[in-house]
Length: 569
Image (tube, rainbow, N blue to C red; front, side, top):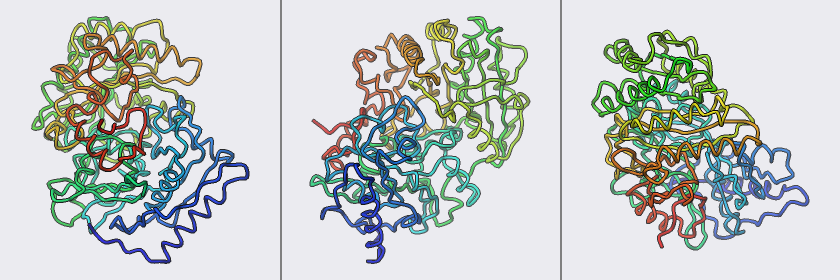
């Protein structure tokens, strides 16, 4: 572990700024306890403070501050918290101080980076302190680690732009521009390059985490994937174990496992210079039940045959948005690596296979397609520079940028495509007149490829044999529509997986759920009668090992939420 050098002046300045911020609580707000003798010095990390240290925060936002309303909720307006205060932080030492104050006062802590959590893990009534990581957002190359240092507040689009424009590299992360790295990476993180390059955690070299020991003392620890690292178990837990379980992540270091040397341009995958994009729609007016069934079976069958790690099909990714009939159409987006051999032929063959027996003509996408907005110009395939396409797709998400957004989501991994019986249920719900919401539907996302080249035990992320990821979801704006939309999503999901207790248990057909798409219904016997616990749907055989890591690094269960890793009994 590398030695960190912090001058006495730096220590005093950071401590003074924290005490000044806490002393600035408005009159009538609950006073915060001062830092106790148990606060661990940042020098215990062995890693230099980030570039943002001293330039941002700490700022304490109490409930009577005008900024409070902005900071007590994330993207999903169903969840609004009521913490005593929000602590804005700008460095690892500020996080240590903030956690120590909360722990010493017995206040429950939660952490927010991008604000995209699907459940109320941060905006929960029991959470008294929210540590907001948005000010810690730098991305840089660390020559000592020979890896890229990424702070948790970095948003994905900014992260991709910095890595690519600076060094020509990227990580195979998600599509949404405003997702924070903090929660995305540690849950597994997948996206349009994952079939080629695996998950984000497959490139995780190290992580810095603020933890609390059995005596309530707070410190930061660096854990790497190096075999001789005594903290390697903490690294492993963050390679798919999800956020809010072991401590506060203050930095990731990303470097591909097969890389050696100090050239940053080789430390992470290089994306294709160009991509070929295509967007097609299928009108509901033309989709009989037989044609709908054929469409989804064509899509699933292609992925079953083209998801081996060595398949030429890993150069192609697509998403099939099975929108509710009220939207007017279902739609499909496709991206092919522009430098792949016969990229145009690969795209043409794929589109022809999906259309076979379904449609003789292609139509433009003129309405929303899952989280994407209209993209009629892509009805004719277009070549684009890679980052140009990333920016276009990331920002073409009007549903997700709606400030009144309310939503519900349920996930499933599929080892095989849907059966005819499944598709009859899916058709029934997508054509149901009990809901009239064009932003309700089932989104099928590509999986497999080099995601499946990693052993399930090598990382905490266990779903290494699936070909599709399914996301059952609905978006709406009016609170009066909550009950209708929640019932539709719940009933839809429950009926598709009725034969296995209402959830996609790990078996020959399905393979559990994605921890980054959390769903507290999985913990409720009213919705999960499978006999498979929620944690086994997320973590499968890795859960017991995650519990041991929890016992070692968070023995007081400071970091908890409705589906956090439980201490061993």
